Every structure is written in structure tokens, then in C-alpha cells.
Length: 189
Image 1 (cartoon, helix red, strand yellow):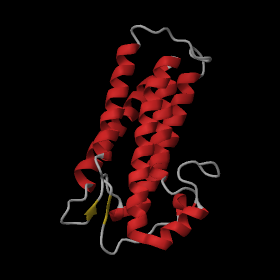
Image 2 (spheres, helix red, strand yellow):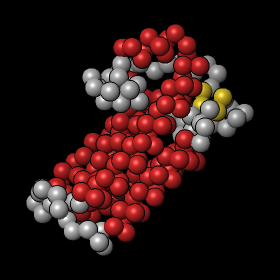
Image 3 (cartoon, one colour):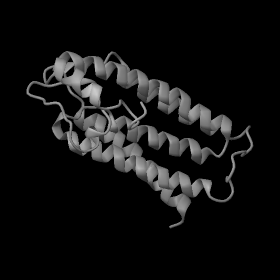
């Protein structure tokens, strides 16, 4: 299997995994307090549309990023693997508390271990790293921007919605946790 085939297989695996997460982990109103405010649909729609626009734009924009013909696709594969690992670790750490829609459940605790000791939203960090891999794989600056910018804005909206729900659910504990960890990028943001 060559690198491009591996990249495509991992991309397909990610897509199937995200669909399975939606089917298997979505919290229903009877199971918890759903406070999604449409962020799940917005995030999915923006990522789907951005990736499809990227595919369409490749017909019109020349490959223009440095390393496009030597190392960039290999780097994109490495970045993709890193993103998948971060996202999977964050999801497994939360276990049954993980939900694809913004919701809290009775008895749910505030996770502070593992990746959650570094950032408040490691699952979204993993998603952002995956999106960075997709953007780098385009090898075109215009496509890079189309993949990364709208998707990142949707992730930031999702984080805002989730943090509002977590503040309501955990109050002072979440405020203290917020002061001791960054949202998305360790030590930066």
C-alpha cells in the first residue's frame, strides 16, 4: 500500500467513525440535558461543504504550496494519524460521557485527566489536526483556506456552545478548570 492509499483509507475510516459516533453516542432528551443549539448540524454541514468545495476548486487552482511534490503529502499523512490519535484518545477518555451533540447527563463528572489536563477540548483539537491534514493534503493555498477556515470557525462556535453547557452543569468547578487549562491549544488558546 502506498502513502496515498493509506491516506485515503484513513480518511474513509475517519468518515465512517464519525458517522458511527453520531449513531451510537448522540444523547437524546430523555437521557440528558441537550443544549446543542444547532452546533452539531452546523459543524457537520460546514466540514462537508468545505471538503466538497475543495474537491471542486482543485479543477481551477494549481498546486502552489512549498513541498507539494516532495514531502507535503507525507506530512499530511503524519498529521492525519496524529489527529486521529488525539481525537480517539479524547473520546475513549470520556467513555459514556462522550456525546456527539452538546449534552450533559445526570451523574456525569468533569474530566480532568489525560489530554483533558492539557486542554479542555482535546476531541476538537484532534478534529482540528485532522482538518489541518486535509488542508495540507490539498497542496493549494486557496483550497487550504477553504478547508481550514470555515471549519475552524464552526469548531470555535461549537466550543462556545459546549463551554456554556459545561458552565451550567459544573459551575465553579468548571470555572476553576477553565483557569488552569487552555481551550484548544496547550499553553496558547
